[in-house]
Image (cartoon, rainbow, N blue to C red):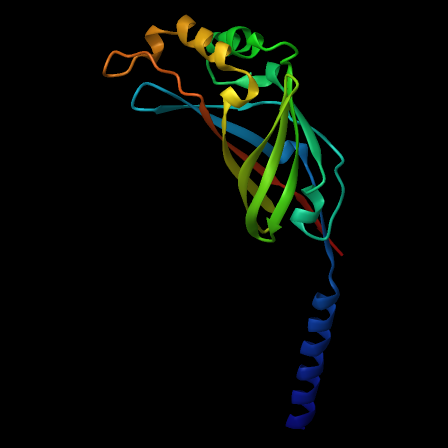
Length: 201
């Protein structure tokens, strides 16, 4: 009798394992669960100033068997008007003096290429702004159904040299550090975090 019970338990476990093994999941991009944060730097000691873009317009989305598969072919546009540093007056100056220095500098457009890795790896972020196209190296990490992409760009690569100087002039006193020098760095770090919808059947 004990052998019969043991056999029944083994069959039940085997059946349950088979059911779980057959479960298939798909991942889909969700704009409400995606954020783009940036960190600019001021002062000689390079103090960070954080902000974000409130709007990311994404095209070519699709469902995929993995997180990476579902996002690797997408393209996007980031309206400059959606910049948000939590200081409205500063945001207006950034739009007018910094981005406004470039003709047709209304948005960044981009896509990813040269993706290497599965759960972590590297890629190129191909960005276009004001007619200038540059590839920016990025790193990515996938955890469950969330992907995080990080990188750093030089705004001088996108024709923003005069805009940087103009913005620093407009905010000269606010950009003075402990040494009394007004400094606004051209480097900007960024982080994109996207949690995808996961559906399993």
